[in-house]
Length: 186
Length: 312
Ligand code: SF4
Ligand code: SF4
Image 1: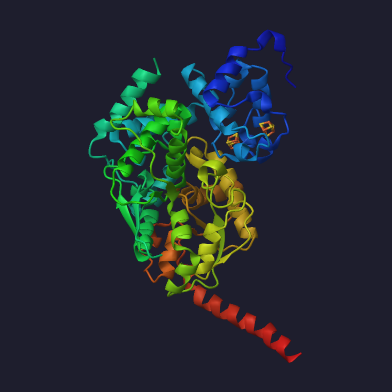
Image 2: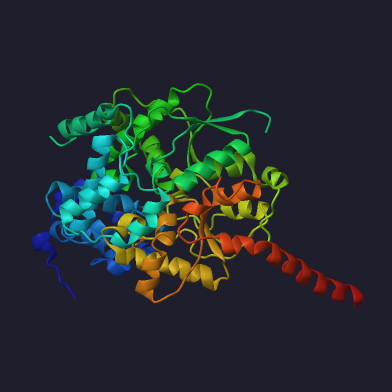
């Protein structure tokens, strides 16, 4: 069991920041455990979702932003749908993942690399390009054997195009990313 | 159904790749049902899950560009998409952009602003609500009698309910009813809205093997011959990764995983290749070929107890 000395590590700004970015009232959680009961990912989490909520109430920034759970949440919306206090729990997890990204925490590198590869592919082509995305992922992680067993299944079916399906004007989408970097990431 | 059904259509990226057969059967079925789909001109990626895990303004802008393009089309009543992931992104952006402050931030990222004038719905919702099982049923030329299906909706088609505003969030029934309208049987399936492992197949395959494995186990133990789904990612995890799942879990599933539009198409008289059955990894052909015999057996079985009952 982990014991946390609250008075030493409580970060009130962190609580306020999560509340602001998620629009949720963190103190409403009364630890019923409904979110965890329905969460399909508890088996790979290092901190179950109701405990993330409790740690959040206690302002445990470092523990939360460095946990693996925030990267492994699939935003399946079970917790949000079933919370008796109408807390949008999945949104809170999403916001903590945004913060972890901004502050350079990344404890599930493969998951982050997949998301990054996906967005790079969208920024370049305007649409997701599955083959290109896989190659980018392999480039980032060095995991060459990822799903190599699927190739003989999927290639003959003509589903994985070797060339991207670009939009007519990919610059229009690249511009969205550019403005986002300028305006939202300071 | 007197008024013309005309919609803005958002195909989604996977429709051009790993879910080609969904895209193909969706278009064919909508046409057969009198639903006109007008492609959103030069639509782009909605950002899928990766975008919302990075920032909600970026995610809403990527979806918002498509909302804005759709709103500029003439005479369409809604924006439709077959993919639940695209649906969620489009709906969440539209929902969040009701907040003027957030909308201003997102519009600042776009070439032209989102007006938020059209409802966003899944193709499933439009077929269910605007056409309906009762109107579908008389159009069926080949009833799928004898086919037992586990109807699998995936985690985000109906959740969270205040944003998705469709069907029941714990026990949805739209796909069940449509499958019954074409003569198939929907077996009880308690995992209708459980997660399949989502897009973790590449980065954390173990997660998909566990969660999708549970779905296949439950479908089989509840007597299903096949799974029917409305989600490209769910379909891919269950079908394309079925061998990986079998190896990891020491199981031997050989369960076809259909898109519901493929089955509606077949029932409406389309050929297997018109609905892209050959693109499925687990071949459903033996199962489909066995249906006439099963239907016959079912009819015989139904006769027997009835005639007994009549005698006594
Ligand atoms: S379901 Fe809601 S109230 Fe209950 S523990 Fe989870 S977040 Fe807290
Ligand atoms: S949204 Fe995330 S935390 Fe919530 S139940 Fe789903 S996987 Fe678990």
